[in-house]
Length: 351
Image 1 (cartoon, rainbow, N blue to C red):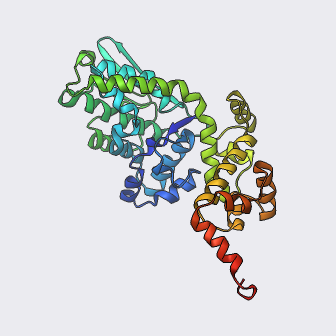
Image 2 (image 1 turned 30 degrees about the vertical axis):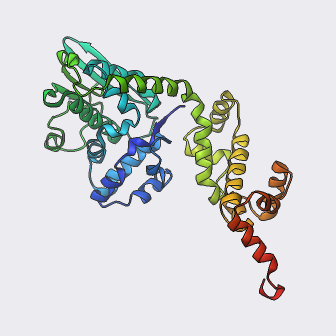
Image 3 (image 1 turned 135 degrees about the horizontal axis):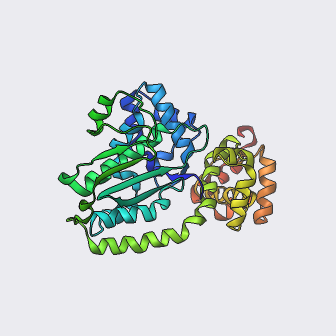
């Protein structure tokens, strides 16, 4: 998938917003992100929209280092399942090498690079942001996460030589010194922490080799499945957008910050199409509601993004060969069936 990141990148975003006097839901919606995304950390979000979100929060709150502060607060939790792999490697060097190797499973809109030069270890973060997307908040967020990762791995031995950032300073040097105990080198050619390369051989005393092996197998499986996540991501978006009637290819592509042709091509490469995913999502949601709830069919039609009940019923009959009412009678739960029965047994003057 292109230009996406796990929603775990926004872990503790709600806490950071509260401290900054912001409403997290309002800020998410302003950036075009689902308001419930914080409860779905393994879901995918647009990295471009995340960068916009952090920039909006910095401006709205008057906290120019909002991204840096969020990264420090969230720390290594942003890596989700990947964290269990890197924290159980044999050495610091192996841990950072594995992070670089599998980082694309966390975010496809950037890369992590680990190298040694002149006895200095260089942990570099290379985000991919489109022209016009503000970068400083996202870059500083990444730098803060990198700092917390190195502190976790090295403990008391963590003593960086330098921090390099490609952007200009967003606040006085003392503000950075207070937060990360370092004065960054701004306007650099990379975003990187540097430290003594000898520390790469430091063993991770709390590492669990058995857990590492288990996570290695799991992560390798995820690596094989990663390209197949796009259809599921589109389906997830549609579930959010359907009740508002926002279900066009153009709207979904715009949310993903892709051209419609690009989205169609990517879905075609996965053996599906936008219309197929829309139909499958509507079918799954329709049968779930009919089986597990007793909402009216008119309400259900609206939740699925149909203009009226007749249009929904026509589509449902095409899918399943029966009307929604007939399907509910045959497959719905007892409560729904009783509701229908009571409705039919009411005198006409009560209907």
